[in-house]
Length: 224
Image 1 (spheres, rainbow, N blue to C red):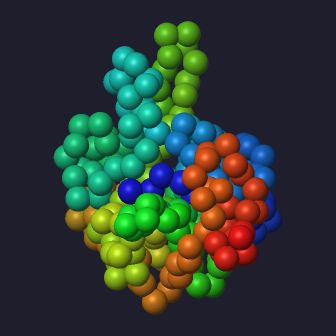
Image 2 (image 1 turned 30 degrees about the horizontal axis):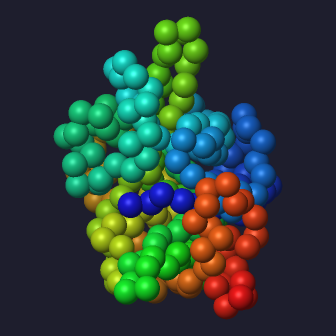
């Protein structure tokens, strides 16, 4: 799964990396993004734009928005058949920009928080889906989920799932709502290559979702 991630970049870098010109939310460095919080999401409508969404997808047909609390991730293997996600997968795909994410490795001494990022340290995009949900007050809530897949060799010792990180040349096709080639879309959801990623242990400071500062990403030995 993917339960925490970070976004340590700025508007100019995202504009250059993803070709975005329109921003509908302020972008500030976030070291410890947690479920139900607002996240920056790129959608194409019709040009790429950055909008804010609640992390935890609320399907349009839901009666209670709390269902979104359990929908932070969507399994890529069943994304086209599971009712809660299938409509969004076919028509409402998005990019969720990030610079790294966290997983907790189980050991005999407890869970060790690990930080995973690209070796280049460049921003990248999780494959995401989103939804519009209308509250009884007529307020529209936009929400999203991050797709997950089998772990690559780097992540296998840490967790049995990993978020889907798209190749740069896949991003436009993923965003295109007119793209209805389900087989081609699902082929994008393979594990990202291990040789392009790195992982290191960080302090348990990151365990608390209220902690959102540089200490979250510092190597554990630097926090002693």
